[in-house]
Amino acid sequence: MEKNDLKALIEEIYENLLKRIDAEENATKSQVVNYLKDAIDVVLNIDDKDKEKKVKEFFKVHKLKRAIVKPATGGSSIGVHSVSTAKNAVD
Image (cartoon, rainbow, N blue to C red; front, side, top):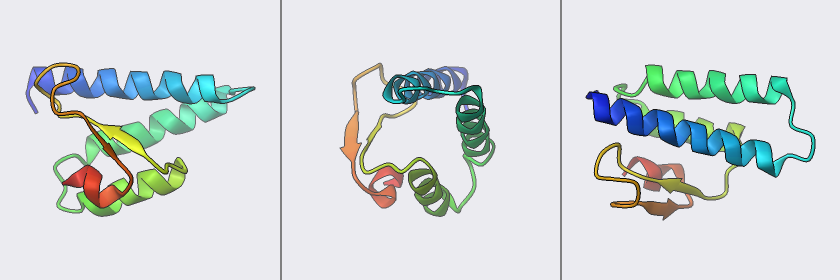
């Protein structure tokens, strides 16, 4: 991954973490740690051929019904899509 791709990925992880904290009435340190562990796994396995399986697991673990997906490059809103399945997220 290029530097800009990595920066965009970290920005997205940060934004998602803040949203999850805001969504919880009593967010805990443990919840934050678990989210970050999941995010680390996603980053470590970015180039795996098993992307759809991993994204499905991410949807399941975080009980996602919908997610916002954006490309790693192109700005903060260019190419942003709302998806409701892991397959759509990978595509």
